[in-house]
Length: 319
Image (tube, rainbow, N blue to C red; front, side, top):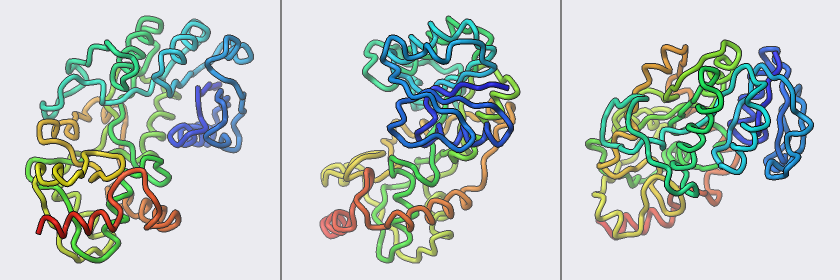
């Protein structure tokens, strides 16, 4: 089997390539290579996908093409050059394509965002899905991952909590009532995408893990990290007044969503499971992430979360 991965040097891409190579697939990666090297055993073709001749050296028949981008200027030329000679195509999209986040258990039939501004992440992914469907029809798998987590996560979102709960002292958290966490380990996602490519799965699937109450999430992370401190639950309006932000990024409490968007972490995994999607226990992911966090430095500057000083300052103010 011959597979072309459009990307393959970033976090998820490298994991997919490793799994494909381990399964005996002949893998070619087309990328600029700025995110790192491709895994051993894969062929690397360096190209700027914005260039007119980007696909010239990889034209031909492919058993599988995996598209990791949603940017129209990358997606559309790839479809034009490669779709007609690809036996199967996988587009890695996102659960952010859904227009509503207030429908617990919503499945793949839920209404999508209308793509009016392709500079927006959700809009661009919907546009990529529509273009890919128009060109590929029944040869296409659209994978919509939820929050991808695991060692090496460049966003620092999930890793904030194992790192924080490995330290002593009271931990600042949002109110947990009515809130949920739903994640998928990068290793589980890449294993499924590799298997889907080899077995030719088609259709649309939310690639998501188990839904758990946020309070349960904190309990399970605490058990792995041996955190024995107190949790200080603070109301949304108080956190926002202290410039603590939702979900991700600087001065955020990662995984915290407005209650109106709580169902974003409650997507149906039924089709994913029917397509042999499996997820490991949360404790396994937390242990791996904690080891990675310790290696990278628990107190390093982070892309997401509160620094120890920022957390301490908010706790002092709200007591």
